[in-house]
Structure formats: structure tokens, C-alpha cells
Image 1: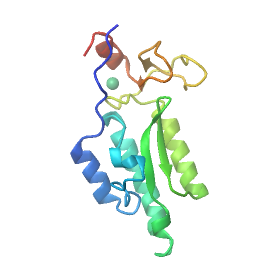
Image 2: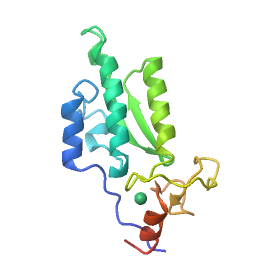
Image 3: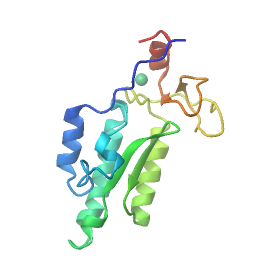
Length: 158
Ligand SMILES: [Zn+2]
């Protein structure tokens, strides 16, 4: 079975929009010490989810005393076992709830197009239930949550 070529992450325009709209959350987007310097390592199907989640977290930071705000920033936005992972320098319990909710929502959305994914059995205990491509890959390899259409497209080598 042919694998999709390298995953394509958020476009430059999407990346720029997030950093511009949420300057507190993404204040360290280009800092060399953070993994976020590589960009948002998420495919465009989850853009709206990342946008909504970023908006909620950025609003919490904006409501903090100005002296506190610089301590709270995203260090990484990527997938972990095909769920959305947002890592922060520091979090509040409310931020943790928002991030956990976004991870849960991401398990039901195709990472390529944002379509709802039909519920399916998990390929193994590490993954939440759903359709994952490649279906029998090594857990250390890149894998992505897909809708049926994208599963079929990738399986044909697109
Ligand atoms: Zn899809």
C-alpha cells in the first residue's frame, strides 16, 4: 500500500491568521526554544477547531493581569496518536479543560477535510476509536485520522 507523501500542515495564510488573531497565545510562535517554531503540525481539516480553541485560550490570557500574560503561550500544536495536542508553557484548569475538549472533538473529524468521521473500533489501545491511515502502521510513524473518502484516496496513493 502506497503512503501519502509528507502530510501538509496548515498553510502559511492559516498560520499567519492564527498568530495575528491570537498574539498572546502565539507570542512565541517563532521562538527557537519551542516546537512551534516548526509551525502548526496539523492538517487543514482541523483548522476551524484550532481557530475556535485558540480563541478561547487567548481570551483567558487577555483577561489576566498584564504582568501574568507573558507566562502563558503555546509551545506546540500537533497531533498525538491522531488527536489534537496543544501544549502550553503553563496552563490554568480552564485551559486544560478547553484543550482536552478540543482533543476529544478532533477524534471525530477528518484531519484532511474536517468531515465527521464514522465511529469505528480503535486500531489499538493508544488510539481513540475512528478511522486511521495507514491502518496498520507502526505507532512511531506518522498516522492521520481520516474520513472514508480520504482513507480511500490515500489508499490509492494520492
Ligand atoms: Zn476527509
